[in-house]
Image (cartoon, rainbow, N blue to C red):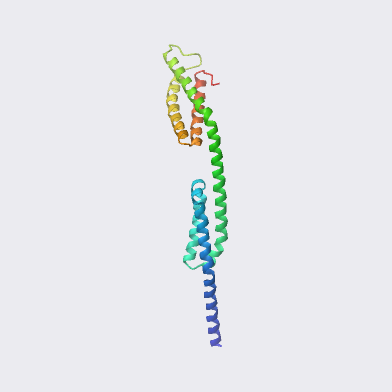
Length: 199
């Protein structure tokens, strides 16, 4: 009876070892496939979905650790979730890239008119500020504070406009339009405070 149980135990150990050996190759393949899939999208993911990429990288690291420890069953169990996470990451990064490209195209279209309008507004304010500075009497509704803030606002607008133009010349029309819009809004406020028409 003792002989039988020893034989049975040896048989079970052999089966377990064989089972592990049978799972090793698929586990290694699963890790390799995940690494290849992730490598193919890493650049776009890094740019458009970095947080999500980090989470997927962590999942892959955990799976590789399981493989190193010989937990082939664990690797195979984790593989479907990782594959799904990589697919989600790919979709998210591609969607964000498409959004960014659409926003860039829209900003590029808008830049043409803006690059003409905003300098005109700034020049008009400069002329008005120069005229008011020379004048002994400020028009009704315009205070000395309005004029002082218009002067300091002009410097800020010129600096911001220079940054916007620089961004546009380097092809970053999204940033250029964002900065240009801020200048435009500030210009409109100053024109209003000086009693100018912004139309």
